Image 1: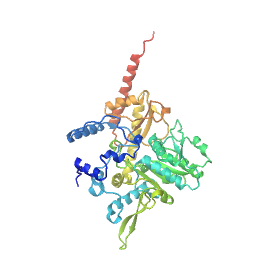
Image 2 (image 1 turned 180 degrees about the vertical axis):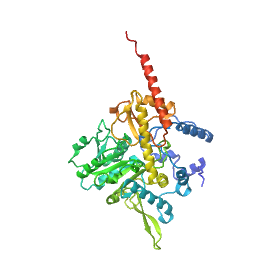
Image 3 (image 1 turned 135 degrees about the vertical axis):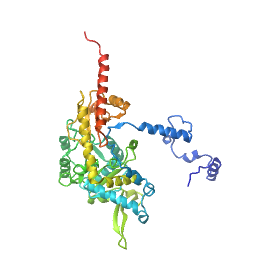
Image 4 (image 1 turned 90 degrees about the horizontal axis):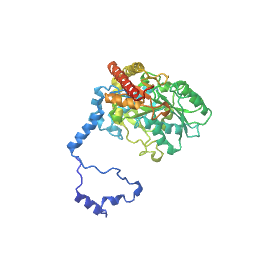
Amino acid sequence: MPFIPHTEEETAQMLAQIGVTEIEQLFEEVPAALRYRPTQPERPPRSEREMMQLMEQRAAADRGGVCFIGAGAYDHFIPAAVHRIASRGEFYTAYTPYQAEASQGTLQLLYEYQSMMTALLGMEVSNASLYDGASALAEAILMAVRANRRSESRRVLLPRTLHPAYRQVARTLVHNQQIELLEIPCEPSSGRIDRNALERWAGEDIAALVIPQPNFFGVLEEVDALSDWARGQQVLTIGVVNPLAMALLKPPGEWGEAGVDIACGEGQPLGIPLASGGPYFGFLTSRQSLVRQMPGRIVGRTVDLEGKTGFVLTLQAREQHIRRSRATSNICTNQGLMVTAATIHIALMGARGLEQTALESHRNTLQLRARLCAIDGVEPLLSGPIFHEQALRLPLPAAELLEGLAAHGILGGFALGRDYPELGDNALLVCATEQRTAEEIERYGATLERLIQARRGQLCALRPATL
């Protein structure tokens, strides 16, 4: 049904019916200090043609450029069939499957997604997604604090090697629930969690330990030792992982002697385009014993009275259902369409395809590191083993060189100095997925080398002559 706005006469009639003269009176109970006040003058209205031209200009600004940025969002190949199938009407417009009998297709897809994620991560149960990786971590922290009955504290160890945005979002979502996030420092040479610093909490009452793999610098953490340390301290473990890396690395369910308790992360590498930052989706898996503390929906497989296979929502502890004020979260309708795309992507790629993608990404990053470090003044910043990202030290400020690279159509990486000032303004995080070719890597290296040489020449020209 098309949207038909009310005329001024119709609006006046409705206001008169309820005894007010203008719409503004309906909001008088909202305190003035909380009312929105535009900070800029209103712009004149645009026609449909003008709006289309503006949107095309904005879209064009996002096009182009060879992407060497990682930092939590990755440029991976997505088979054309993913978009083709996910955009079918029955998937594209599907809503929360409240009525199982009318939503068997959606429920089956979510069941397959959960099965794939538990297999990929080596875990026992999975929910049917969250908003994004950062909010998935926050939900995992809340879940761990509820679940750790041995701990009376609400303290969680959060490493500085974790994605800065994840740390910020987690603090925003849990601090009002009196959960204290304690930061574990980074070991400066390797880029890993500082194991010596971690020992200061040995014997203390801690609810959970968060372990990233790989961490924000692309470095692989000592996950076995960290998991075993936490288990020895009766601390629950939360693995925050790149799902594509798990096709190549040991999954969190197998870390240490018994694996982690909860594993979560960002699902964007599984068939979701970069799309200027979203929408993405978060995944959350855990041990079977913690399933009652898991937020969101869990789809189960059963048989009906005639013996036919059917799919149902076995657990849906959401705020508008049975728990209400006791709900485990407020995630509501989440990124179900993104999960649809991810399920199709995983099914198309298969275990072998995901592993091959991970291997090619790792190989390309090693080639990128070798090419860039051949430039005078460029060197690895951290010594720890990597997956498909590498932190580098440049001879000049990273932001300055990134601007020059962008002018040549190269998205050169992520400047680390703002989030990690201790690393300095010259620190840069680069990434090469399976999408990057040898020609693109060489072009990046040659362009960066020219920019550094040109800048050095300018600096030398500005120096006063010596007598």
